[in-house]
View 1 (cartoon, rainbow, N blue to C red):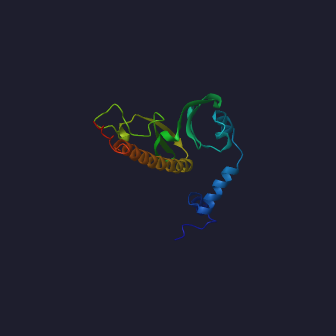
View 2: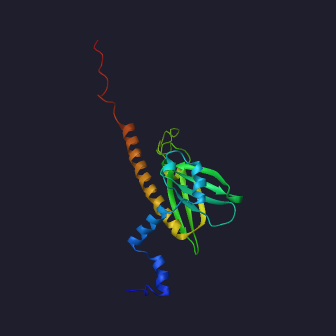
Length: 200
């Protein structure tokens, strides 16, 4: 069913919300071809040499001062605060190994993103060496760091959410594989069986 004539005012408004796959791909390609923004140039000062070679994904809160800025590279997520005169402060950064989950909430005029991370790099295994009865912990038993960004543009937030959801699913599978490998190594018998008995 045709919603509205594409040349009408209503049709043009609906066209902005319901883009075809070709138009979405064209929009993504156009965004990569755009020159670096002033904010992007400022943020790149915090990048490693390897990160300097790529184009980061940046989303900023549409609220007063200070406001939070989330930067996503191939190696890590970085949380900044922008204060007066657009001065940036590095609040925290997490490598993707620490990433647990992302949640998107759509409000009337904006969206909210919530990211959760393990506090430490070595939290990939759900392992607690101080708990003899049950050496493995559930994800909910870990103390997690939570980042919340509010009043985000709906389109930008949904795009960032889809990117982060891919990373969440990837690392959940990695944790599952390594968890099984860890259990297998604990239950494995020593190679070759027990040592031979000495002849008297």
